[in-house]
Length: 297
Image (cartoon, rainbow, N blue to C red; front, side, top):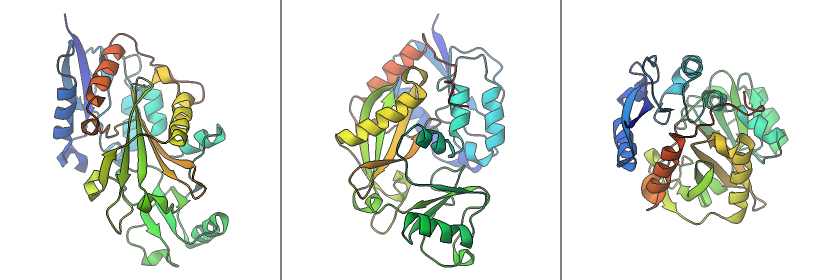
């Protein structure tokens, strides 16, 4: 009897449900073609009432629109075979997880976390970071939503600054000159690296904003940083991961984000990536490290 895989998809009540996720889901189905399992899908917002051999939140877009509901949905999956595990996924919802990584000695972009972005907090950050250009973003966000590069003096002049709890970071010039590196891991093992360079005049590295993406050999320092982030979670506890980073002024790398919920895995940019992803999923059907390490809550 073939096994059953459930892929979680967007909440129909959220804007993400009207996006291009069906094409992304179909791409994963194609990547998993030939696997000895039947693949199902349903919105992450609906209770899972049937038994599955593996549940994957890989297309759970829109979680940032209702983070508490999403965490509750993950908690409700306790006892099911979920990869990436619910505890790790819930931890990854709020970008304040970066503090845990920094505390473990993993180099992140210097970050000031605030309850609310204000002119005084911006001024404080400029003193701390020694530069005027800052990145302002919510601690719960996706796809660069409500993220902006800010060099102004009064936030009342800003176009849609983040509301509520947020993070302030120095703008990293390399994001425009070189780009953002994304290193992909399947079942804890490095798969491939993609360099994403924004179009001229932009800072957003997503394909949605016409960034240029290409597969390149990851620099040794980038691999070392990504490996440290993966080891922090535990290689046997991750089915998939994307480690995003940017080069700092000293030539080293700073972690931007550790994407463990629904990252684009950039399978089409590497000829063998789909096979490595398929092998990882097939292995996860038989071995699933669903508990969370002590340092991830």
